[in-house]
Image (cartoon, rainbow, N blue to C red):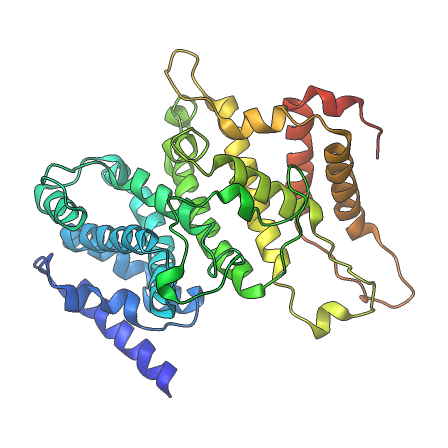
Length: 378
């Protein structure tokens, strides 16, 4: 009953937002907070409660309200990342903001007049509010996109939210996300990391929510005309894979290790995939997709354009230890052989669906890391 009331309240807020012909007050926090304070159970609910037709109508009839909602969601993510996302309420807020942005961004990208929204300077009112909250002088009108991605990358290595905390304590004792060494919180043992963190499905789910939003941001290139798409650089990918992202190395390593360490069969118990939910496979799939898009950016760079180096490509090309190649090779062999497994019991073994992405990633490894070509064949 409580969950139904929550969905009803959220839906009323959406209707109020989309039915207004005049801009809603930017400073009306009691209204805007309805979009992230309610404990909506999943992204499927967000998609159902925010219909596509209403998003498009909002974009055309009252664009100020759509812009304000996007800004407010990014603002919440940035502020909570500053606070280390240490309480249940903050984590709920983060998840709802992630899901709302994941729902809204495709409709922003499909309109040519909106595609530059996250990379344009903020209006005076929004920049004044941001500066007031950060103690600035009121001149902070930098784009939303870098602030959003910096917050997302911080949250990907947030103790008790996306990684296992190394120390226990109350909310006041949580690590400062800007000062922790995220290389100590890599998600899985493998390349460049020997410790095996404990597996928590809740952490996998939270990582997946953030990576889905990152992948949605990457998808902006899909909405550009083909002729223009051939010569443009994806700024989202460029930022994630540049030195502006201080988590570039641990993020690349985490994504690669999660993929290569995944074992869909486990101990080989027949029909185990029907008895137990597997939180790792969805994370592996979205990790593969993020890796492929990030590594593809190098082939899209215009030689005459001044762009920063793609650190993901750089890190991949520098893998050289025998044990790292063995880890990658065994992981790919295990996963690519999975759809070919035959057993006496029909459908008793879990079959993965991401073999096409695995083939693409294996090709990129051979393309960027010339040392990998001389390793023994599968």
